[in-house]
Length: 282
Image 1: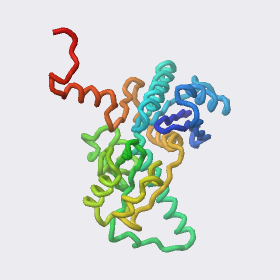
Image 2: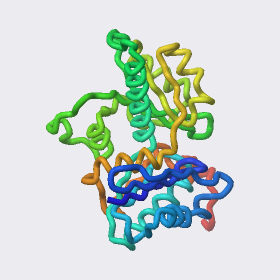
Image 3: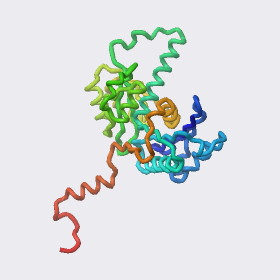
Image 4: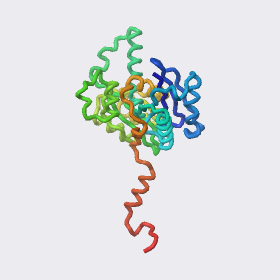
């Protein structure tokens, strides 16, 4: 199975290629060029490097957001177009879920490393729950966030009634605690702490370096902050694990979290008193 994965939710973005049972390569994009300038050439170049063409791809995968509005739309449209032409299915997952999954995997690797060194990690966190969260730049001094609880297994009956994103999360051992949101970092940290005051957190995202203080102020040493890997690689691995969760290209639903500025401006204009609007004619 050949999977071509794309992330355009950040300025550089990334692309990844999965073949059979391994991640072949992950490439970060050039942040000095727009996604529209680089696509689909970046994807074709990645395939060509490994002696493949677009016709060889079995599953196309794309990060569905949130992220920069223009880049997100360009990425989704690119994958939709390629999948439609090739009559291939598409796998989509949100930026926030991928960050949480990467944070969860990093925590597992860290625990395995400690055990490999002969350190006894049992009982270290018995008195508190361990959660993973996403912490992503959203501009306007706000962050896109979500919080998840890692679990060993989710029984099939518990999946009934869940949306596609929550089903994907549950299938990889994550249960949503705090839905995708956009807010000031201080507000999110306060909300998380109010709901889970004794929790230990592993938080990942491109905003952890700029907006760490609110989390540290609330959780102290109980929060671990991690910079994210290129998300196309995380996406490709997830698509390979869940090939039965693909959809047709037209069924991809962008995860904006925040409404587009144009819609907000329109609503503000419509909410103004009738006398304050500009009218043409009588």
